[in-house]
Length: 257
Image (cartoon, rainbow, N blue to C red; front, top):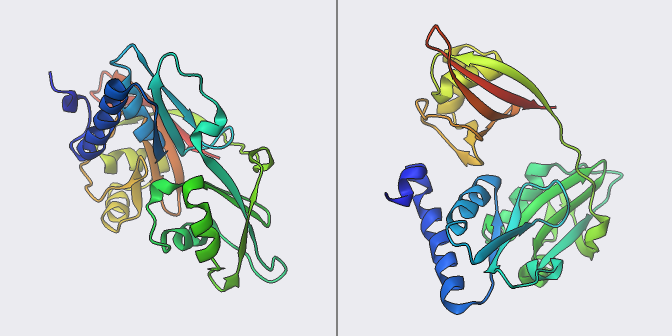
């Protein structure tokens, strides 16, 4: 049975990369550090590396509770240290009295530097304090090139990982029934919207599943999927419990508070 059968077609490119990483460690007996991965990519990588009992896959994103993490794939004898992940924490200095900086502005400015999203971890904001994680291999470049966010002039300082803003995340969990596991039906149930409204949100590019834009209303959702709808927040399908007597799907899902 092909490994691709266990995943979605659009995930094939990442699966190939993960297989390549695994084969590198298998043949060289040397650890392999990846870029920052979103939770879905971490899940796929664990499944692929887990097929080899002599390899381990360790994840770290800079602090507890972050979503995006680097993976270190290594032989079972390798002793892993936090320093192996080569992650730096950077705080953004800007004129706080006059400017408010939002998450999307930080991400947009970082991406405008011409680097891949995988070079950056989570962006943390608490009040007027703004931080982000990044691979240490790009630290000098980012410090030199990132001089503005929106209309604000900024400077970047590296600070100890222990000084990261603490993340508190909670979900309100509830059981829902849906006529199908199509994306539009699931969004309608999770956010109490009409099917037409859900379809419009999808077609207008306002919906992401597992951090990837999805514009196909018939996309089939599955257990563990994280669904983000701009303007409505984020939800996660914790489990799909099977069908009811009325042939509807019963699922347990959470909405992020």
